[in-house]
Image 1 (cartoon, helix red, strand yellow):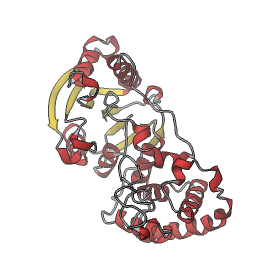
Image 2: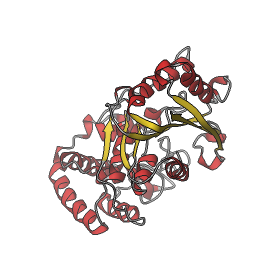
Image 3: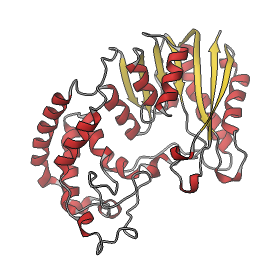
Length: 340
């Protein structure tokens, strides 16, 4: 979800001090904008990378100087861990992205960050993991869905792109970039969970659930983030896959379970605000996610207290779509349900 949409929804439907919950938080746009605008926040995602990014955004160092001190401390610890890095234990598909010395150094920093619970610094590492630009760590690679671009940048013509990359200087530059927008003082209640939305904890006094559930398998979250996910967990996780004969039923089942977990905790006059995208893959009809969402709230007895307060449509420009030839989700629908 783009930050401008998240900010608009938060300002339109909640007030300062209200509790905002996002059970499909992804990279944390809703959680960050809620905290930055004085709302209390509980966010979660099954995807460890999404949970990490959200945690890093909600709990940053208090200043650039503090971040640099923490980086120096973790970097020193990582030098003690570098001898432990056996690249033979790393899958060949991961090794293919990196100069061996770069990979060994990056893995040591990953281990030191995990050991010290440095979510912010670990997120910075993953943020520079792969790209073709000099400030990143991999061989020339796509920044989005990772693949080595050795056909476009062959080693014989671009030998420097395959040299060892200095991990520390690139981390220092990444940390400085993150502080171009200084973090604001956030409310005390900020909580980030790595959890399946279907098992979200019971929460009370929610003013608004503002979230964007998976788009009918329009994206494969594990595949599209596979290199960062492997670095984070040293393995690839099992994902929530909305595949099979009946994707409509899978989407409805996932959304229903999440809504039923959170509906009892929403205040009278509070909101379920769901941002759903048109599914365009597989040759089926578009716009199904919005229809399925509305049908769920119309038919589910446990959601009888909610009334549709508004439907808004937002077209996604081509520049925001990561698929080749601008394929993929072309529009999002915002459904606002109010608890009476």
